[in-house]
Length: 278
Image 1: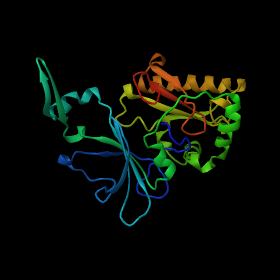
Image 2: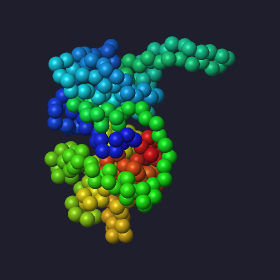
Image 3: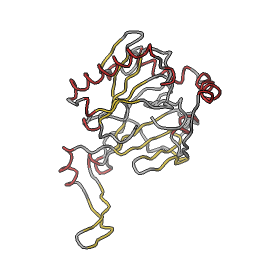
Image 4: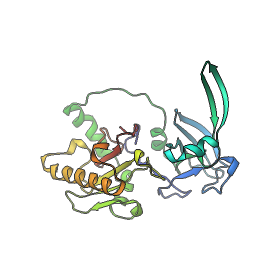
């Protein structure tokens, strides 16, 4: 969950006005598969971000004024994919010198895939979150927090994190839950983050723990009384990851963001080899 409007959740929808989560994989045109969403009529309005591994575009579908935001990301390579990937590569040489040569490689088949998040209808806040921005280092003193940050947090409508409450209340994404501790003070749920998707290579492990206590919005709200919550969350989260995925605690990075991308306290569990999100 990246910088931008910190209230914007990753809301993904299958062409419906009510938000729900899903991930689409676009296959190579050489092996065209039925698409979960017909993008052939998508009308491009703007490219809001173009990075090495991510492309964000905004547009519309005919007959609707609602904005569509597509976030296209390159998928992580898996070790088991190596031979099939190499056999499917078509190379175009761009440079050669002695034993060294560089090429543009065109993938084919299932290897030619992107992870695509669609937000529809997308608000101005969603679009801002996925637009290239300038970043600055800043020092937030207690006074700055009380005078600027806290009023901003309190101005955020509750419905901005309704998707979080849907998970906690088991009305959405129940099939993804890995662990549930329903205690009102020390409880939490653990589930795979949207950044980690099938086939779930363990070296790309990225899980999210969301606390039950709705009064904790960020690390700023933590007090000594919350130590049992943090200890419970860390111990049970690491134990579950070891039991289910065979990844030891020494290979897990456990951390929080500040400022967070949404103001309901949550903790990230990632494999130490995961470079993003930290």
